[in-house]
Amino acid sequence: MTRVIGVVSGKGGVGKTTTVANLGSILASHYKKDVVIVDTNISTSHLGLYLGMYYCPVTLNQVLKDEVKIHEAMYDYHIPGLRVIPASLSYNDLKGVDIAKLKHVLKDLFGKTDIIILDSAPGLGRDAMATLQASDEVIFVNTPFVPSTMDIIKCHQVANDIGTKALGVVLNMVGKEKYELSPQEIEQLVELPVISMIPMDKNILKSLALKVPVVLYNPNSPSGKEYKKLAGKLLGIEYKPQGFFTSFLKLFGIGREKQKREMITKDEIKRMI
Image (cartoon, rainbow, N blue to C red):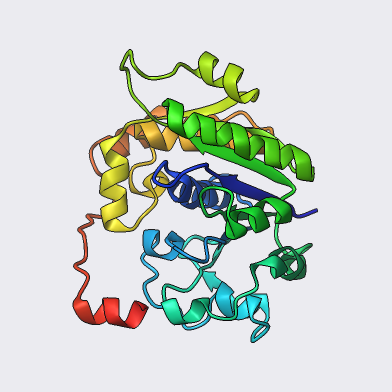
């Protein structure tokens, strides 16, 4: 049975798209699941950019206009088992999109993949509501601060009203500052468990610059390990760290390709929009 998991946040910039990219990557690469990640943030799409997919001639926008079938907007990522359905980066492609059709068009993927992960728009606008309604389960991405937590409270209430099961809160950008809300405080406010705590980690910033999920860029980084644990929790499987020998090889860069950031040209940006 195909699971549809929405990844939702009350506000932008809290790490929702990063969470989707990393969960999809680790579920496919480490847990050997067939995964489709979908950018349902139609108005301000980013998922493709996070994965280096600058130009996609067919996107979810065309699917929601009834111009193509959903499998035509699906792109293989370089990890076996992971496919991506991006949304368009072009303003012109917003015209005529009916986001209310999202739940219906996703049905064509049922039975053909293990997990569908939806990268929602932030807040409770039309895109976000369509994502909540299309999801069987939802994860809320939050930061340890009051404003984003208050927004999650409202998102949780809406999920309850429409019958979408809330799995818990992913607490992102966690530091060691006294002014941060504790996991216990957030659990009391939101009335949901904190199922993962992703630390502040420079490896995430580096991986974003390279357009590679951190679980692939540096699997043994603090954030990489936490994403692996989170993916295991979603499957009901306890994550087991790699053995000493594998970790030793990676410590000295053996088997790891040297990577550098590619520059984005003005011509590429024009093609995107």
